[in-house]
Amino acid sequence: MTEKPYHHGDLRAALLAAGEAELTEKGVEGFSLRSVAKRAGVSHAAPSHHFGDTNGLLTALAAEGFTRFQDTLDAREVGAVDDRDRAVRAGLGYLEFALARPALFRLIFSSARPDFASAELIAAANRAYDHLVGLVTVLGGGETDVIALWATSHGIADLCAGQKMRTLQGKSHQDREAMIRAVLMRCLPLSDG
Amino acid sequence: MTEKPYHHGDLRAALLAAGEAELTEKGVEGFSLRSVAKRAGVSHAAPSHHFGDTNGLLTALAAEGFTRFQDTLDAREVGAVDDRDRAVRAGLGYLEFALARPALFRLIFSSARPDFASAELIAAANRAYDHLVGLVTVLGGGETDVIALWATSHGIADLCAGQKMRTLQGKSHQDREAMIRAVLMRCLPLSDG
DNA sequence: CTCTTATCTTTACACTGTCAGGATTATGGG
DNA sequence: CCCATAATCCTGACAGTGTAAAGATAAGAG
Picture: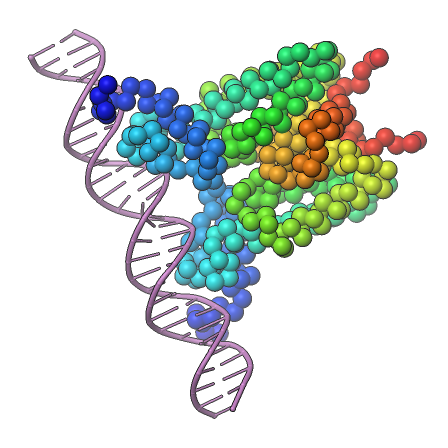
């Protein structure tokens, strides 16, 4: 139990955690690598060996964030009464994630800092996209339906994360969710019933 | 024709122009006030008197950008065959602006730096929102329809501005526009025809 | 003309990201 | 076990950034 061993032990994981805290407090635009190092209790140059530069750390955070994003959607889909409800719940999960972790959401979808050519980031993004395609495909939908559901879910989430949609902010939780459900319904392929 | 008069003459406008150039070249995240001052040919502290700090300049740029955003939509709406087509064209204008000026688009919708409590910024944003509400109202739509059209338009625009939607990038201009039209159609209130 | 105000510059400071070099520890071959 | 090697972390330095203070210059009011 030495106070400060020269070697941290698992600095990479500690920096990821500190980086996420920095992200939620200051956002992508206020993100500081030196501040992250301070949070982890190491020197300001320590992160370079694990992530290269600042964008490297942000890339790792984005990849990690993408899987958390998909986890949120998956959790919401549990308990769906049918495939249509499942797709709508995915859209609600999209919004839930954007509201719970707006900075991470912005890092993933609206920042130029992460290296989106990174293998692990591409893999995480493809997992999410493939899942979306699956949701629409089982409903008999095609490319247009994928675009519709994705764009609408993303639009609601992004606008709410940025506090732009005052109409929804004023509503109660029930009213809000009912409204969004109604909007998302229109994006699904026409049911044959 | 003196080379460098101590007083610029219209430094405020020059800084706005230089700021927009800086924005398109480096994006919101790479925006530098000192670099903007260099572009305008003044000292690095000159902008402070006109805009306070960096966020002040970004706030002015956002307000200006918001009106240009609305101008792009208005231009697209010209020539609409009916009110439904008009609403769809507005959505296409939304995307057009996002692709033509992605940095300005991000500044307006996805940045925390501008002061969104600024009077001129609020006014510019309200103008755009009121116009949207008008488009939906003439079609007999209500709050839900406003959310649907806005969110879908915004989702497509934001995802395309960030190069996230590879499905659309691969298509030709005609196919792409046809697809988006089909998606936006679903957001309009049901026609009584 | 003079005083006041607005505009712009210079100087300074704290902070940031990144690089180079040195210190410390873990690891594996002998 | 011992030592060379590599991995890890720290210190110091540099250029660039935002912002504040104080001085220089010009414009305008009286």
